[in-house]
Length: 246
Ligand SMILES: [Zn+2]
Image 1 (cartoon, rainbow, N blue to C red):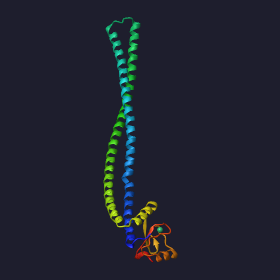
Image 2 (image 1 turned 135 degrees about the vertical axis):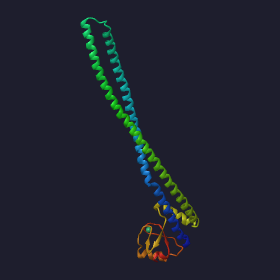
Image 3 (image 1 turned 90 degrees about the vertical axis):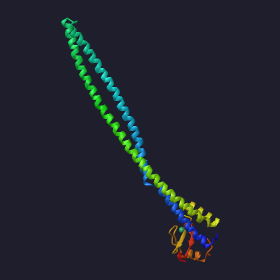
Image 4 (image 1 turned 90 degrees about the horizontal axis):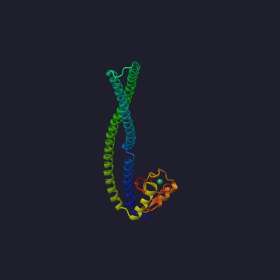
């Protein structure tokens, strides 16, 4: 392939823009905020599950408490009924009186036990409620952190994209100055190896950093300026300038 030396040199400018685009894409992919957002989102999903579990536990304990309280009420009402019967004087047989008194005493003991149960459930419920509150507070903090990280990410993305469109515009102008066949070769090489053209600098290909052999350098030296030469090692287009060491 043949191309005017200036057109060949323009490939280096094109490669520079492509390298800049690669760097911007890399920056977009590896933005530190992205890992942070990922972690925070995961923690948020985890905490949502934990909140549901804690809320369920608190609600279960609430029902358990109501049930225990109504058990206490039932025993207390029974004891009150018995006490009224006792106070009314309707029961006169000493044996029945003793039985009634013993039942009342036993109901009071039972009531005391059941009240203990209520207290114990209330304590567990307080712990569960406190856990729900703590988790909700944590969710709020994480949500705020996430919003902050997303906003920083979006700002960074906007900067990167702005730089990207500037570089893309420059690239378009440069590409427009390069003959179609040379540009097509460059694009093909860029697609396969990432970089389409490299400077031959001091006898060295700056694409793959290989130092040319004397024989290869002689071949390049013998090539006409409008001949498109390639690196034997990486197959990239080798652009010759005054710095090429020929
Ligand atoms: Zn090379």
